[in-house]
Amino acid sequence: MAERITDDIRAVLGEHGRLAVDVASLTDQSNLYEAGLTSHASVTLMLALEERFDIEFPDRMLRRGAFASIAAIRAGLEELTGAGA
Amino acid sequence: MTPLAAAGSLVDTARRIGEAVAAPAADAVDRSARFPHEAMAALREERMLGALVPRNLGGPGATIKEVAASCEALGRSCASTAMIYAMHQIEVACLVRHGLSSPYFRDYLAQLAQHEWLIASATSERGVGGDLRRSICAVEADGSRIRVTKQAPVVSYGEEADDILLTARRAPDAAPADQVLVLARKADMRLTRTGEWDTLGMRGTRSLGFTLEASGSTDQIVPVPFPDVASQTMLPVSHVLWTSLWLGLATDAVGRARAFVRAEARRTPGAVPVGALRLAETVAELGAMSATVHGGLADFEQHQDDPEALGGMGFALRMNNLKASASRMAPEIVTKALAVCGISGYRCDSPYALGRHLRDAHGAALMISNDRVLSANAAMLLVHKDD
Image (cartoon, rainbow over all chains, first blue to last red; front, side, top):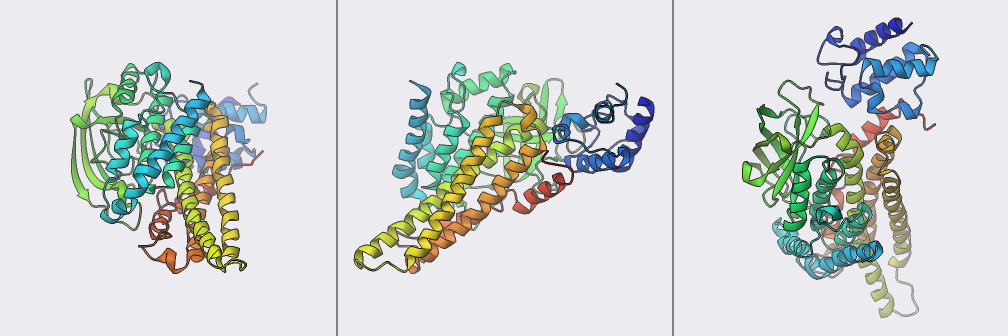
């Protein structure tokens, strides 16, 4: 389950993150902002994740830290979908 | 001294300097587009530049609220002086709120409180326009030594400042948004002028363009990533202090309109002057602006020690709204005050002159363009739910 979520996150990141590096070169802990994620692209990323996982991020999750790494995004998604718990 | 008495004294001092020093020079500063050196010297003499430095570092430990009230007071007399004071305090606030874990910045702030140093800001850059969150220039490190060269199209009072806080990418291979804040010291910096400052208003801020070549040590990098400094302090404090001084500017314009109508009324007792009705409308708008500005200040104060709240989209949206609303209201109010004063406000040689106010007020919507601010909000509203 966690692996599939991670693959989906990587796919969305690759399509919408507009990163300066290849997503495949990132670890789950890599800092996405250091990898080139801008605040504008992070909004696009949030929208694409909401669409892909059919969820809505509550406002409390709309912070830089919640989208700072693949692991952070996965933790947020798992909390929202009840998976991985 | 109780904190309340201290609060009174800071604002009272700002008002006194505004009335006695800044106001009499405001027209000359505007006409010659020169630095308001007499008002800045007075602020320095009264130890107003180190106001935000904490007490344990030898400063008075003033609050943002007190500094905002001081900006409002100065804004009534000379918007350029108020803007220079505000911009300096924004830089000090960034260091006080994000630099205290560093011995270098603790020592720097203690010295700032002692010597009353003036800090300027170099955030904009040729090639990224006004996008605060992207840099082209980068910190080049060689051991513990660093170098930064920045093409800065506008550095307000850059020539007059003691030091300059600038944004740069963390390293030559860092992404454009991977920024740090670096304190460049005057002695280790070369400024080559690349642009002049001959503008419609805010002429005393002397926001010239420069090529800025700075060197220093890695200690001079603020120990917190710039995006956190920006969202938690630089942007909200900018919006709070700028809107405060625009409120002061609008208040002075309305004050002139009020004086004009009173003088008219005294000349024709029994008849209500034609401008009185429009004045009543203008005073109501000033009240709305005041509520907006003071509400924004209260919002910041309430959350200022909560990084989670400050970093959230809801807060960013509200601070952007504060900026966009107040900067729209300021020129509208001054324009209405001009309509009340009529030709007396249009003249530059009358006590009711409003030309400088009007020109200065139009800068509000342009410095960090309202279109940029609203575009940022438009993007955030795509995901923000106000839940």
